[in-house]
Structure formats: structure tokens, C-alpha cells
Length: 143
Image (cartoon, rainbow, N blue to C red; front, side):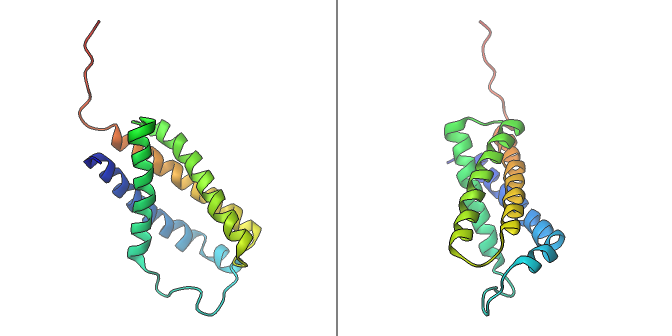
């Protein structure tokens, strides 16, 4: 694993942390609050912030490894496209499983969460792709 992959994952985790705080913690707070079924002891107050950041780092490290080792993604637009697909599929997986097994939130909240996470993964995927493609460029000899 190289420094660019680690840097891309770190930047992705930072963006995710602040994006989540702004979107979920501020903009959609009332919407989420009104549609979540609360149980005694369900929510930690305050949340464990380091765990949020480390979780984001892990998922974006996975994305950076995939982009770097297998997909050869080295710019924003291909990273955005791949990030949108990864975000959509991961969000569908997590939210549909939660919807199937837990009485935590309704269908409308699930759809909003899927859309927000897909957009977030897309943007961060673009940033990861741009970071992986930054720096010294290899110059190919003329034929």
C-alpha cells in the first residue's frame, strides 16, 4: 500500500466526517429525528466520534485500494462514477438489511439515506481518484 492510497482514504474520511455532520447532524436532523423510532438506550449521547472517523477511513481505504490496484482510476470523473455505483450498492445493502431486520425507521427515511450516501460516496470517490492521479506524471516515449 502506498502513501497516496493512505492519503486518499484519510481525505475521504475527513470529507465524510464533515459532510455527515453537516447533512445528517444539521440539515436533515429534524427530518431524521421525526422518522426514527427511538428505544431506551438506542442512541449514544454523545456519539463516539473517533469510531465514526475510523469507520469512514476503513470504507474509503477499501475504495482507494480498489481504485488503485484493480480499477486504475486516476482522475475525478471516473472516481465520481465508480463512487456513485459503490455508494448506491453499499447503501442499498446496508439500508435494506436494516429495513428488513429492524424497526428503526420507515421507508422514506431509508430512501433519503440511500440517496445521500450515494451522492457522498460519488463525491468522495471523485476526490480519491483525483488524489491517486495527482503528482508526478509518467512521460511516455514517442514512437
